[in-house]
Image (cartoon, rainbow, N blue to C red; front, side):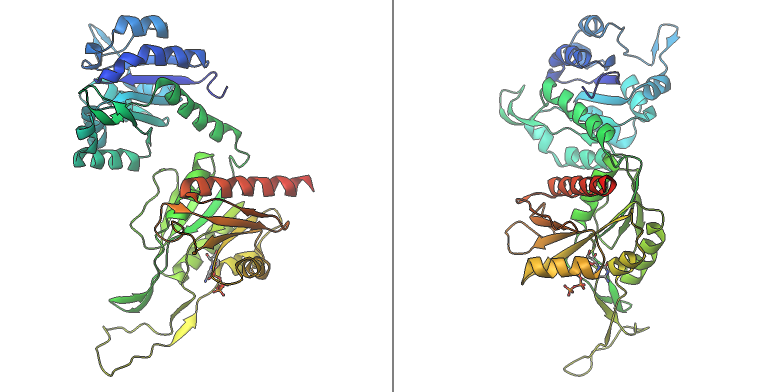
Length: 405
Ligand code: CTP
């Protein structure tokens, strides 16, 4: 069991779902973890600290100071391998989003250096409120893991979104996290990921670009980072950002900038995944001033950009794994295979534009993985997260096959 020996701080805030937490503690202990419980004052209206102390076999912490004793929040935050805030009320979520520190739970959260998992629980209208959405986005951007709410009966008597995930699901969520982290054969490696579009400036206000959002590449960077890989993400102009603060993001605009950053990062990388939609051409000259409207037509001379994938392919060391992407509309497989050989890549992720829900901007994607061993793996239409996991697993298999030779 992946959780055996792990130290978990379970922080309980005020929500009816708190009544499930003694069972949650039982399950965590059964999974081999050591549990320390923190409650807010509001939580104690829903669950008894005595019950929690009995099942966790340890006194429950509620206040920053109990009588003359000071509860060392820094120590607790550093002790834990994971902090689970379940249930996380709308109020606690808002405090976490804004760095408010008016109770022990918030103090431990702000001191925690371990991964933090948040299991929200609230009525549907609160859950759907724009401020809750903003707060969730904020805490997610700090690198916290949100465990999705479920649909069902709520304290109000209404049925809808906002129920805390069941204790069994919370435990398996934690177990999955540690399993991925501990069992990944890529753990400790260094990876370069390129993502997003590039903008090629025509003049100070115009550019040639494309519709890439970087979603796929960011998902790959997240999956690698979750497996303990040190990731450098070279990201073209997009509003999207990775959530994991461990990802080293280098922001670039043009293909030339992406080329320079990628060449630099590749030298000591074990794996490089080039998912960026790099502009193949750039204007031969960038006009220093805005180009004024003149005749009925305008000619802009374009020159070829340097090919990052091909350059890395040419300098690649045998143990480095290089992955490229291809977007083809005709003879897809043969073009992708040709691209892999021409650019000396170890694998090509072939994107299809023909499937609804696949491609730029969508949350889903449908790809075929083609590797240098000649294997073709056609994946179904699935979330970009699932596609990212499949790509990363395939890379791991390729590295294993290499070692076995
Ligand atoms: N790529 C790159 N640098 C470029 C252009 C592309 O690194 N200047 C990478 C992309 O990130 C992707 C792969 O090469 O991983 C495929 O890009 P694509 O533009 O389709 O390849 P081309 O060889 O230009 O083929 P095509 O004839 O389809 O344009």
